[in-house]
Amino acid sequence: MDRILLTGATGFIGQALLRAWQGSGEIAALTQSVPRAAASLGLPHEAIFDNVDAAAAFKPTLVVHLAGAGIADARWTAKRRTALWASRVDYTCRLVDALRAAPPARMIAASAIGYYGPAGDPPVEESAPRGDGFAAALCEAWEAESRALEEAGTAVCCLRLGLVLGPRGGLLGRLALPFRLGLGGRLGNGAQGMSWIHRDDVLGLLSWLRGAPVLPKTVNGTAPHPVSNDDFTEALGRALRRPTPFPLPAALVKVLFGQMGEELLLGGPRVLPKVAEAAEFSFRFPTLPEALEDIF
Image 1: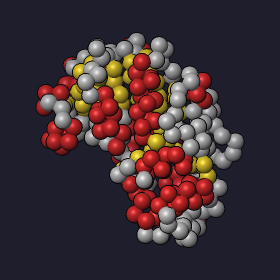
Image 2: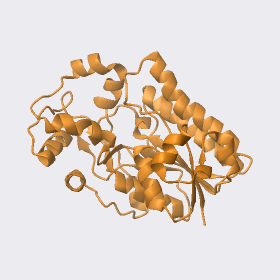
Image 3: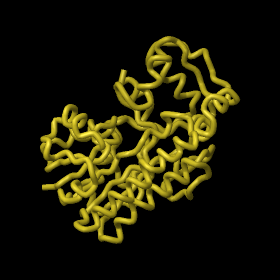
Image 4: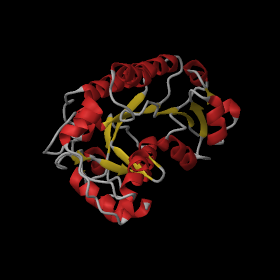
């Protein structure tokens, strides 16, 4: 039976994964707040660690590393860039160093489709090179720290997550209220890609990777049908039965959000999950209308 160490356990994906995997292995969580985790996760206190050395002493056979500050939670000031780098790159470095003494058989490490940078058509897949910009550099460094555990014999997969959709959190947790109030609208010209995925399919990918005979090195965690921002806006308005009459011009997006808005809100790539599809992974929600119908 697996001994599973989960980081980011109190997050939008982590809490759902913990519920999905409960009873299928011995699970422990690494978190910055033991009291909060103990109150929300339902794990025994001794299975919750607040430092990497204690977590490594648990001697996990599988690590699912989801921890990291939200990249779109705030404008990318110098202070925010430092915090993002510390929560992803520096934290992963400390975790990997601690795990070297008793390396797990596998680590599934979160990354993001920001790796591909701002991009238009054509769509990109796992073999595409790193793109330009801060998010791409951050993802590349983040993945490099995770892959450093391969030197100790651990099989490492970097899961490049897209925009995760689900009830009461993730992207829709931010968009639902303004759209319900009839204040939604496209961003810029609406042509940029939105590579999304239902949270249940993220859990499915993680379960597939947990049991895969050979762990792929990189997997795009996106649905097989990315859409434009214009199409996403229309679909969300239709799902909520609300008009979407308030586009936000690109110039205003740049003023309000700076480089974060330019890279993430106006420059989204269209990303295809070719590795998962080649392995015949079955998405529960391959199209956006199906996903939104389930959520709402």
